[in-house]
Image (cartoon, rainbow, N blue to C red; front, top):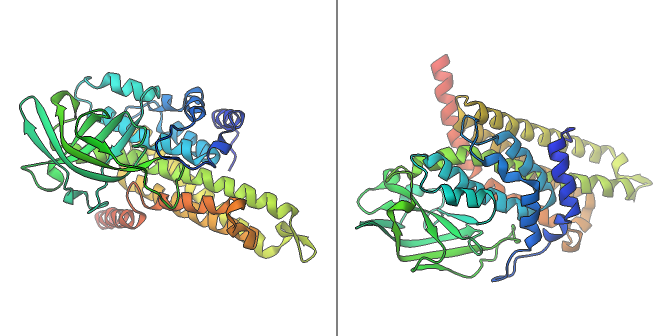
Length: 382
């Protein structure tokens, strides 16, 4: 669980210097900026260098090292890690669009955290069913006009750029999905007040309206109608990252359970000496390690350009986030009734980790993807 890895250790130690874990305990206040220490920490840790153009098979420096960074930051602070996961979606999309360099400046600004971005896909009438997207884009002389609404958009409250998925007005389904990079101050773009959520309460989550938002042709990301193909490549890279971040938080929950169990005496001995709780801790450890092994495998698969990336990335997300959910649940058991008290802090892990099984493709939908891929493979090789 604790590799002797200088890169992971450096992130861990820098986070402690910035006391980043204390920032993560604060809920976002609508209209207020996030603490600058969050961004200073991420810049000094140089985590986004892993996503700069490089020689890995997906065109970045190293997906594997990025996953380690997500795990370590996730163990420290839920706010910082969700800045990382959200920003990475847009960075990957710009990298994969790849037909020219017209958005090179914006990409560099995001890699250096000089600018921040959010990803606008989810709509009130459909989350996982992207083919039913209602946000529509109309062609106009010299550019495009976007009309529609998005909801539950993470980091929209402070984003400078909005990566918007919209459907061409004359094309149905996935074939019409097209991506645009829209500036925050574009006329017609409205960011509504922060939406209160169960977990991930340290960052803004907003509804966004696009009322005849005009976008120049230069802000088209990739080609018309190719947005879904780009997003599928993006999600292959980001799904293991969701798992890595969740496992980081779960590891901290385990640590807190172990420390509490060392000192808490019940029936004449510390909880850590109780055979039942030892069994639970073994279960937690096995789940955590299994989840991380799948995340590591996905990282190598992406860096080396191996086949089966979509299924392996999906399996990594399922295994890691399900493991994190189990670990947090069992960790809370060590505290008994105290674990249910908000002041103890264990319930926050419970709320924060839960969403990781939902976004970037729900685990239920991903199970269908994995089953389809494996069934086809089994039949072909029988």
